[in-house]
Length: 519
Image 1 (tube, rainbow, N blue to C red):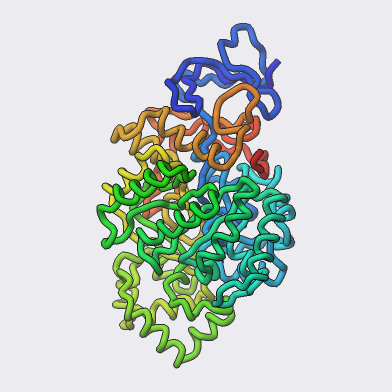
Image 2: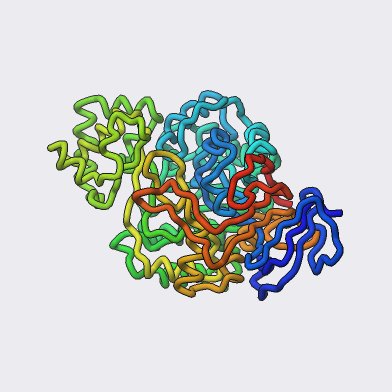
C-alpha cells in the first residue's frame, strides 16, 4: 500500500535521458516504486495521463529569506513547481549575526528582501534554519553570507581585513557550515561585501573548500567591469580549488552586449584547467535590486542610520548628487518599485527619468528623495539585458536555472512568479532551444548536484518525493512587467517531501518543507 500513486505519466527523471511512461509509488517522504503498478493500491491515486512527471524544481538564487517566513505558503514559487530554494545569496542575509546586526540588516536590506512583521529572534545558522524546517511550503538551502562574516568581525566599515579578522571570519564560516550552510555567498557590488579584497576572499574560500562547500558569486562588476570581475573569482578558485558558482550570469548593459560567448569561454577554459565552476541565469532581460545600490560607496559606510543622515544633510546631499551625476546610470531604464502603501506610490512603475521630469527635479535629487522618504525601502527594475546574449548563456551545459526573484513591492520583476514555467513554455516549447529532458535537468538534477543534495533532483527509488506534474502543452507564465504577481497555468500537482502541496492547480496549505543540508 502506497500513500500516493502517480499513474500514466510521462516521466522525465531529471538526468536528461529520454522520457518514459510509468507509475510512481510514494511512501512517506520517499519514492518507493517506479514501474507499472498493475494491481497496486494507494491511499491517493493521481492520474497523470497527458502530463509530464518530473523532479521538483530547485531555484538556485532567491531573495525569499524572511519573506518566506512571513508567507510560509509561498505561492509565488510553489505554484511554479519550485520545491527547493537557495537563500542567503549575494552575500546578504541574516545569520550568523548578533541581534544588533540583524536589526541593522533588517533595515538595510528592506528594499531587497523585505522587512516583514515577524519574530526576528535568531542569531546562529542553526536557529535561523529551524525557523523554516517543516514550517514553510518549500525546502530551503542556506549559504553563509559574506555580510555576516564582515559585520561580526569588522563591522560596517570600509577597511581591509587584518590577519586576526581573517582568522575570525574563517572560524565563523566553519561554524556556520557545521550548523547547516552548504557554502558561502558574496555580493561584491553590495556593501559591506564590496569592502573586501582578494586576500579576504581567498581566506574565506579556503575554509569553504575544507568543508567541501560551494562558493557563490555576485561579481565585482561595478568596480572592475565584467571580464575582470569574472577573472577575479577564477583567481580565488585557482588559489583554493573551491567549487565556484556564478550568480545571474549575464552580459548586461550596453557596454557588454554581444559578450556572452566571451564570458562562456572563460567558464570553458576554467573547466579545462580543472576548476569546478558553473553558473545560473534567469530568462528575462531585466534585472532588479534595491535602489540603495546606486548610492556612491562612501555613503554606505556605517549602515542605514548613517546613510539616512547623509541623505538628510544638505551639504552631504550635494556631494551624493554630484557623484551620481558624474556616473551616468541609464536613468530611463530604471523603473521604480515601491510598496503599495508608499507615500510615493505614484512613482511605482515609472522610470527615474519620468519621475524627475514630473517633479521638475534633477534625477539624482529624486533618487535621494525616494530613499530618504521611504527609509531605504525602495527597489527598481532595470532593463539592461538583451535576448540574444541571454539565450546563448542559458543554453550552455553548465547553466542551472534561477529566478533571482524579489518578492517585495507592488511591481517587482515578474521572474519571481514566472521563471520556471517560462523556461518550459517560451524557451523549450515555443522556441525549441531545449528538449524537455534537458531543461528539466537544468532545473532539478544539475542544481542538486552543485549543492551536494544527493537525495533529490532525480526521480529514483529511495530519493525524496519532491515532484511536479504539469501539462507540457499548456504550461505558461502569466506574470508580466505590468502585472508581475500572477501565478502560472499548467502546473497541476506539486509534492514536497511526499506531501501534495498543489492539488489540481490549487495550493493545499500544507507546509512540509525542510531545511536541507549537503551530504
